[in-house]
Length: 138
Image 1 (spheres, rainbow, N blue to C red):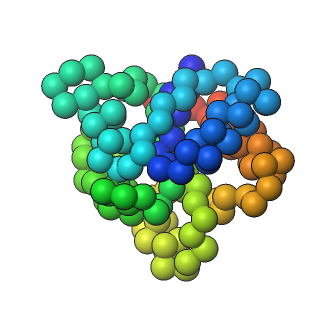
Image 2: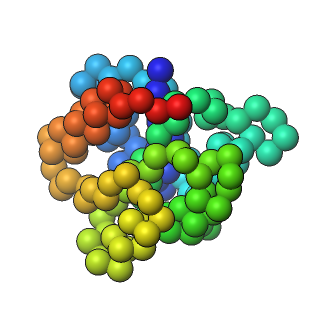
């Protein structure tokens, strides 16, 4: 089973992902962090068992968050030998070219703008999860 870590501080977006999972009958383990620092702790475990299991991990990442934003999180993730290979998809409202360029420099698997309507959001989440369920992730 795929272990999805959603890193997003917007409660509505988190609820929309959860609702999209339910509506599409998506069966994967969903973990939520509200910022980059919390996400790193969930992935590393810091002396304890990681909250997100170490196998078959995928990260959906927002860029604009408090404490540690998405780009900072990506820099830290890619610098960590144990975490650097985890696929990351940016799912954000930021349409800034500089954010896109920086994210791709940090080897994201995709950069998707959050759809405005819930139905389009559900469709985007369904497509993403279908693709990554079929993909071989160590």
